[in-house]
Amino acid sequence: MRDRAAPIAIFAAFVLVPFLPWGGAYNLAVALMARAAVFGLAALSLDFILGVGGMVSFGHAAFFVIGAYATTILDANHIDGAAPVFATAAIASAFFALVTGAVALRTRGVNFIMITLAFAQMVYFAAGSLADYGGDDGYTLAARTTLLGRSVYYWMCLAILLTAYLLCRRVVASRFGRVLRAIKQNRRRVQALGFDAWMYQLVAYVIAATLCGLAGVLLANSAEFVSPAYGAWQRSGDLLIMVILGGAGSLHGAVVGSIAVVLLEEVLGRFTEHWRLIYGPLLILSVLYVRGGLAAMSAGRPGYLGRDF
Amino acid sequence: MTLLLVQILNGVQLGLLLFLIASGLTLVFGVMDFINLAHGVQYMIGAYLGVACAGLAGNFWIGMLVASVIAGIVGLVLERCVLRFLYGRDHLDQVLAGSGVILATNELVRVIWGDAPLQMPMPALLAGSVPLMDGMRYPVYRIALIAAALIVAAGLTFAVGHTRAGMLVRAGASDAVMVRALGVDIGRLFTLIFGIGAMLAGFAGVLAAPLVSIEPSMGDNLLILAFVVIVIGGVGAIRGAFVAALLVGLTDTLGRSMATDAAKAVLSASASARVGPAIASMLIYIVMAAILAVKPAGLFPARA
Image (cartoon, rainbow over all chains, first blue to last red; front, side):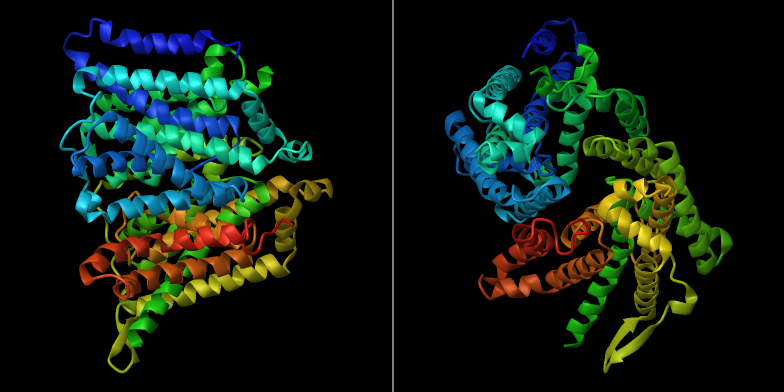
């Protein structure tokens, strides 16, 4: 936890963006940073289980969908209060994570990657079958969730992201977090010490899912539109890219990765319609030459929190 | 009854296609401990090259041969230029770089061939259909595909099970470090496995080309299915990949044809029409989750 400069710089940048002289590009700049904050929250929660807990989930976007569809279903029933919406999204995500995590955490390595993908695919197809809520075509919200009105949306996203970041940081530094990091390093030793590794990982998995479910509510409100596509496996892949690109295990790296991906898409997309021709090789180069991700590059040392201890 | 037979044949055909892709993937993963996301790209490239080569040569068969070989070469070039540097790295790095390869290659294909899906004409020799039972005809091409894939699968199983190179591959899948310590040039073994795997995926792409619409994203979906197959089968196991590929192919095909009717047993007709397709799409994932819940290492893991 010694590295404070980078996270402070990141959040300072978020705060400053709306006050910079963008001129006509003001709305775009703020919208992009809001998007980076929403995806940053999801990526942060993924990094919490992936980088800290060693659980590589390829189905994290499922919780995006669960959060977004909690918003949708309440919206269809004319409920748009922030408290019930966020609570429903959190509870639904946590419950789904508890059930699927209990099964998925029996597996290791690539099998965990694939079983999380399997559960996410089930959510994706289930969302597509909800004909009352638009099916595959998606659903346009009748009203924004309260407290997430257009004028304050950016600041709410930022506030939730910051709270989640501080919370994760706190948890990582706690006794619970130490055990979690230890499980990542050497599961067998931790179990020999008498800890129930499965239970610790399951709790972490549920925490991460809950945070991502909240990100789903924010995502639903960003365009006032919800569709199963939020949970396509490519979205889970995007989240993985953000975490790894930013530097797994550092928490703030996930946010950096999210900003980098959102901005790269936008900037390269303006440059050419075939922006992926540049984006793809950039990802490859980052793997080959930036070990430990962007967060490590800025700090000049490996991004893994675990190595500081 | 005949409809069921047709669906079973279609399922077997999808399963064999999956096996051609999954076999290379599972060996590369089992022996080299390398998650090769770029493997789906080989399948896609195979299909596109098939169309291009068959168009140039004016002959499906020459096109198929040339396309498979070029797909194999593309795989080897990719291995030499990018993937080789990722052996021994964290799986996450491999996934990130692999995503980069997928994004760039799909986009490159889009630049060269455009966004619109391509169609591959059937080879004239196999264009017809044969009577299967009274009143039920089945396309010759699909039968030929099943036969071709079975021959390749048999050849591969024989090569892995009964040749010296195959023995090294199996040994590598169970303990690569020990194989190296015994003086085997593991680098050459890797190249061999990688080249064959890439060629098989490319071959699968050409085989599938006349049956599917050829588009840049076709490799991604097959890649996910192939991963489902190798995880169900157990990483590094050819036999496991074969069984799992057929299981996935049959489950998916039969599920899609029956789920709606099956749902009608419980639900109203309109609800079934909604729920059925969703259940059908989920079915292979439900099967995979169930198998992993009971056997976390898959059905036939190569590593004890």
